[in-house]
Length: 201
Length: 192
Image (cartoon, rainbow over all chains, first blue to last red; front, side, top):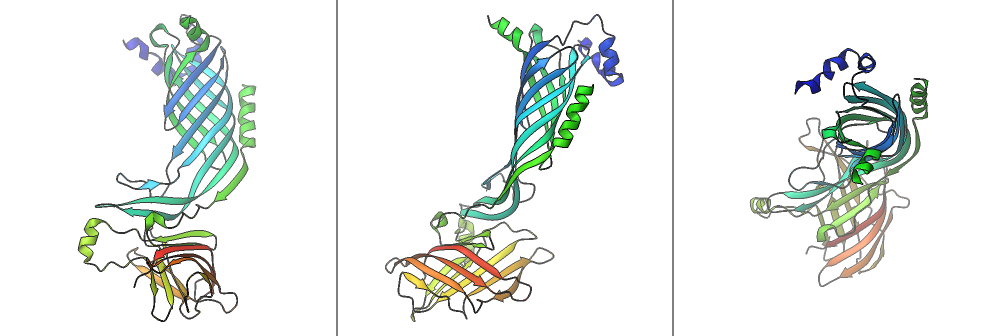
């Protein structure tokens, strides 16, 4: 049971040392085409190639959030006409897979094109009376933008799940850009395309 | 490692804005929720005033003393006056309340009218420091040159339903800057 967690102290001490000093471990990250999905305070999809010493992949991600200040949407009635949103339309990343036991930690960076809408000042509300409360829809000024940004990712992928190629994981993704930097924490599922299709046959 | 660093540097230097567009929310169709509505752009910023009715409980406890934020009156001497205040908005420390009153004389139905200079005012109110009360600003009057125009597009004497458009300009007064009201629209039922 506890053997799955042996990597944790090792990870804290030194990722690279652990990666090189585990000759007995099966090759967790053999060269392969990979694909995955992430769900959290955003929604992402990625796919790419993972070699022994590097990864290269593309991802698309969307995140939607409400206004920074009041009026926000409330439980009964209040509604926001628009949300701030940012879509990473195209992001290419290159990074390193660090093996930590049977799990993998990936750090990656690259270049991304983002498209977004940022809510600005509150303007007006349309209000409709109800029995006890009044329902309001709030309207904001907003800015539409397109920008180039720096995508970053720190992903942890658990050991392969039940002898399949599927890895569950957690990832922190960021897009640093001059308009609005976005940070996401997502739970991911990732699989090996070749082994996935082989299993299907 | 060099490839990784190269991408990092590339991303950092290429982080730039390609295009931005600032968008104001559009004015809604009149009438809003079938209630009395006056709306316009004040120096390009949308202002919407409409009657939103009241909740049932508020109706019971107001005992008929409820003042409609948008109302219009047609006097026996054919003077038409329309009052509006955008009281349905969310109130915060930096809220602004827009009170607009415009009046025209010799009302005869659909057509174009000049606003009456003595009774057409714009008055903005801001919140006090404690965010408890409205502080009314100075009443702004029409300028002597190009005060603007009011156009009545529909008038039904039976239902007293009136609608039209307007464009008005107000002179600066006190600490209130000159204001230009464009794309004005109104749709309401006149009171007796």
